[in-house]
Image (cartoon, rainbow, N blue to C red; front, side):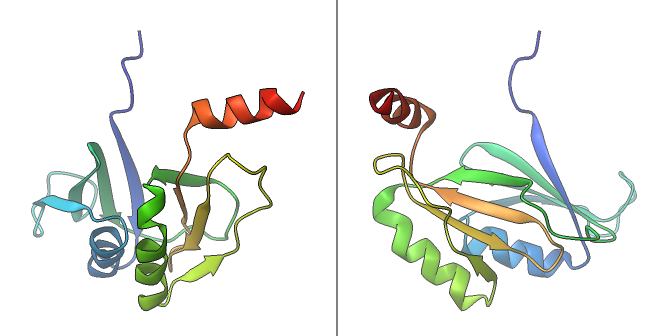
Length: 135
């Protein structure tokens, strides 16, 4: 039986740059740095983001961008502050796709390694409720 999400791993060229994105935009807490030790395939760092274990490993970036992404939940009151943090880091912000009113707001941004992140204010229950109200 699957119990839930264990962790998410991102491969990136520059661990320091990814750490800056995770700690400044996602307010991650760094919990481990391999500091060159060979426990894994390459240097790595672990972070806690809202109770989710996120690992970053040094390596080659994704060859191209796509809509594959990871979405992190944020409170609506934090939307403007998170958007400012994304912009201050010079990340490539994408406009949110058109949404049905009441399903939440999103900030999409790419990092230098072609990962797409989303910061979303809604929940699955809210989205489903909104969709069902339109049927």
